[in-house]
Image (tube, rainbow, N blue to C red; front, top):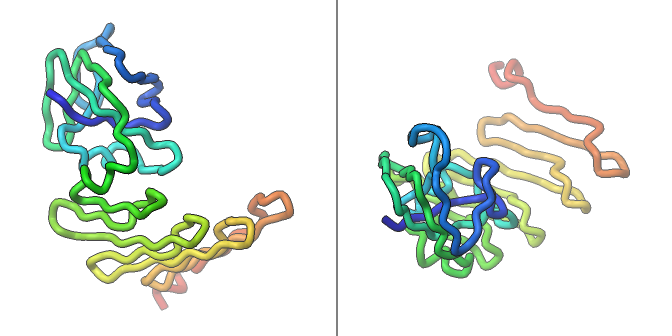
Length: 182
């Protein structure tokens, strides 16, 4: 069975994956979410397991060669072969529930119930606006060094940050929940 494995720079659960190599489970009982080589049959499910980071996410096409245990969104096998890296240029063709801009930022995602989220980014690829199908939104603001300085939610809640000359946070502030309940 072929599928997709998400990783952070080729690593998943402390294990380094390489194209063309086959890996076999050496210890323990094969168990979903616990032990074995996990993958998704449907590429749209990979972001459920790792947060997408356009600079560090690598998605492999894999083939399960051993015993397979299946769940709704993922599978696990005791023997897996890494076939290739999925190029980011192919994401918009392969993903059905996600859309990416020309800088490979996620600009749209939709879950299996049809609920969606849209994202906007500034010229530095920082997220600046998020809106969902239920009408909730978030806004982000950044300083000239791309440090996050303000985040506001449609609920009225907000957060502020200030940075020193070394771009380290030295002050944080936010609305408390008591202010929101007045």
